[in-house]
Length: 365
Image 1 (cartoon, rainbow, N blue to C red):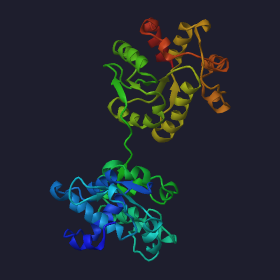
Image 2 (image 1 turned 45 degrees about the vertical axis):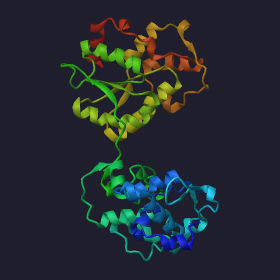
Image 3 (image 1 turned 90 degrees about the vertical axis):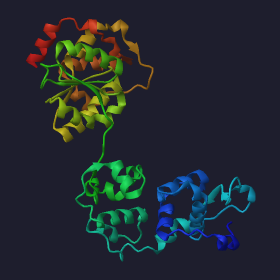
Image 4 (image 1 turned 120 degrees about the vertical axis):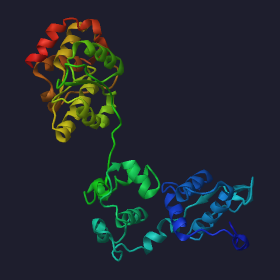
């Protein structure tokens, strides 16, 4: 441990607020915290730290949280002696350190910002340090701050760009007592790869393709045929999270309906099925299977070329069954119920040969 003599020799002092930030930056899920994470926590607590006296500063911060119940190794071998002052290779969080402040902090007596008054309802307040930082941000006049991505706001409030990702999943957020809008931030979906249709494709359907190879094929085809206002790469199962990026696509290349094309198997149908409900609720736009592309795939790949599905066998439930287009339903059910699958890569550009018929079909939909 850092003994009393060493503490008396310690000339560097850091403010209590800095020690607070240092402690808050330590990972809550680790009982023993290695020195690498101590350096990370110091960087978050003191981003302006000058490298020349960084060891002295870290030593002072460690001494500060040691007084709060953290323990240091007793063996000299457990200290980094490569430079002065020596630093512990780890510190250990005790139950006292975990709960000391939480047990003494009374949320009922604290004067919360009006958006956080619900926090006074309980006797104990998990994550109280983070709530205090949110409270401080609100009280500092940021209620009308420009809306920014979640990670930018997270760094501004907590000096940690990822903390709000997890913090926004806590009970208060789940129960609707507070929303990200209070913090003036929004979730930024992962960008979608997409290609805008050529002149003449305006206001035509947006096409989402499950896999990259078929996305390339149909993007190239669409350059000549202008059947879609945009061709979007869905990225398989990722589309369940990235579909929100369609709002950006719609701003650049407007559309009123989304068509989807992917593998003929259970997962390949569940991806658009799940996304369709969310897109309808959020964007008020229907997502449907692209009937003509599936019909072309059906004509191109006869039953003898169906691929045996080696994955887990799944049954189409009634909700999914009712969502499938009438003129595709029996075929799709037959493929999946027989434990087969048809990859979307079975559709090649040469298979979409009758351009005029294809466009005529779209015109009468």
